[in-house]
Image 1: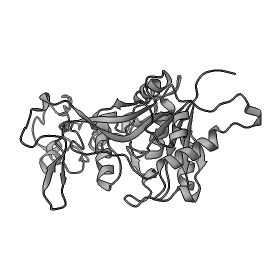
Image 2: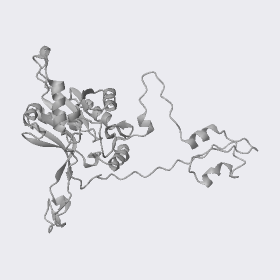
Image 3: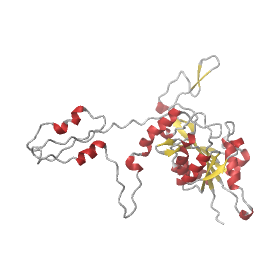
Image 4: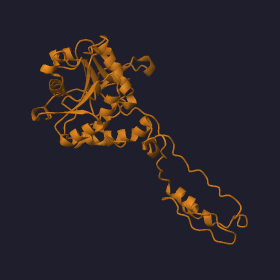
Length: 336
C-alpha cells in the first residue's frame, strides 16, 4: 500500500445561520460559498479528499455537485453552541475510521479545515500550510493577515484603554513590526495531535500569511456585498471570463453585444438622398448621442464616407483597499 501521507480537507457548513439566512449557499460572483470552498480545496495539490460536513439537504446537494463527499452532521453538532472542533472530529471518525478490509490504512495524517465563509481562499496557500505540517516544521498552521492597526478596548467605566501599543507613542507604520489577525479561512493540523488535544492549535503553531485584501469573513450582509464588489478585482471576471473555452474544432459561443453596438451593426449606411434610419440608443444615453445619426452634417458624402464610432468611455478602476484594516479575529467560536 502507498506510504504517501493522506490529507483530508473538511468544510463544516451547517444549514442554520442567524446573521445571513442560508449563508453557506449565498453567492459571490456567481458561485456559492460552499462551491468556492470545495473548489479551492480540490485545486490544492496536497489534498487527497474533500468532505463537507452539513445538516442541510441543499448544502449537501451543492457539495456533491462541486465534487465533494458529504458527511451528515447529527443534530446535536449542528446548533449554535456546537464547536467547529466537534464537527471536525465527527467528520474524521466518519471518514477516516478504518474497516476490517483496511487493516493497513491508518487514516489521514493532516486535517485541513476550511471555512466556506471565506470566499477568497488560494489553493497555493493551502498547499504551503499543509506542506509545513507534512514536513514536520509545524503541528498547526492558520491563515492570518498582517495588520498595523492600533487596537483599543473599553473598560467597565467606559474609558478607552490601549491594547497593543503605548498611547503616548505614535510610531510610523514602517517603524512598527506587523501583527497578524486570524482570518478563519483555513487551518492545517496534524491529525494525531488534534485527536489528542481536541483543539486545532496544538504543538508548534505557525502562520500562513495571506493578503489583507482577501481576508474577508462573511458574517453580516455588508460582508457579502463587499466580497461581491471585490471579486472582479481579485479574480477578474465579467461575462467574457465566465464563458468556458471552446473545445478543439468547436466554434466559440456567441456573446451578447451591448444594445447600442448591436443596433448600430444592424443599421446600414443611408443612400444618397435618403433619411438615415433611426438607431436604438443604449439605455441612459444622452439626448445628444441619440440624435447624432440624424444630424445634417456631411450629407453629400454620407453614402461614401465610412461611419466612425467613438469608443465607449471606460469606468475608472476601483482603488484596492484593505476591507477590514482594523478588524480582529474573523474566526468563529461555534461550528460554521
